[in-house]
Amino acid sequence: MGQLPSTRVNPERAFAVTGVDFCGPIMVRSGFGRNTKKEKAYVALFVCFTSKAIHLELVSGLSSEKFVAALRRFISRRGICREIHIDNATNFKGAKRELQDLFLASQRSRSPYDEMAEIGVQWKFIPPRAPNFGGLWEAAVKSTKYHLKRVIGLTTLMFEEMTTLLTQIEACLNSRPITELSNDPNDYNALTPAHFLIGESLLLPPEPSISQTCPTRRSTNIYNS
Image (cartoon, rainbow, N blue to C red; front, side):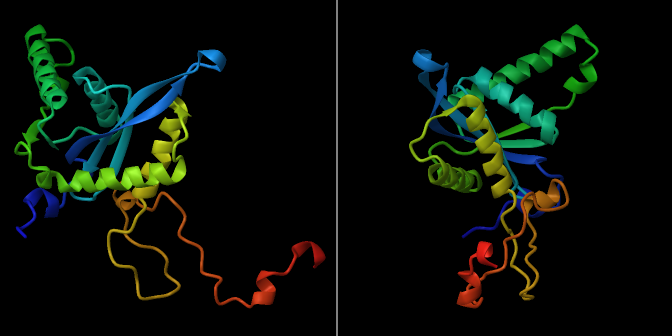
C-alpha cells in the first residue's frame, strides 16, 4: 500500500481540501393526497481530507446546475475550499467549466464581487475508471447508505423529511470516533470529526452498559415502587 497523499496528513482547516461524490438515486415524495408522486433525488457528499468530516446535500438531479447549487450551499456553510477532488463524471466537469465562466465574467464586468471572485478553487480529477483513488469518499458513501437503509428501508419520504434525515445522519457520522478510545472505562469521549467543526461531539456519548446490573433491578416495575 502506498503512502497517503500530503493533503491527508498535513494539518489544515476543515473542508479546505474536500472530496465530492454523488450517491443514489433515492425516491422522495412530492404533493399531497391523490397528487402525490415519487421522484428521484440524489445525495451530494462532501468529505474533508484531514478530519474525515462529512457534509450531505440533497439534490433533485445530476445536472451541472444542481451540483453548482449544492456546492454554493456547502461553501456558504463550511467555507471556501482550496482543493476539490472529484471523479471524471460529466456533471462535475460541466460544473467546473460553468464556475470558470462565472469567474471570468465577473472579472470582465468589474462588479463589487471582484474580490470574492479572485478566490479560486483548484479542481483535481482522479484518473478515469480508477475508483480506488477516491476511496475516502467511497467509504463515506457506503456509511451514508448503511444508515439510510437501516432508518427508512423502502419507505419514501417527502423532500423536507429526507433533508432532515440526511442532516441527522451527517451528525451521526461526524460523531464517530476517529482515534482509539481511552483505557479509562469511565471515559466515553473520543476524538471525532465534529471536534474539528464545533469543538465537541454533535451527539451524546453512549450510555453505560446495564448488562452487569442485578436482574431484579432491571425488571422492577417503577409503578409498583
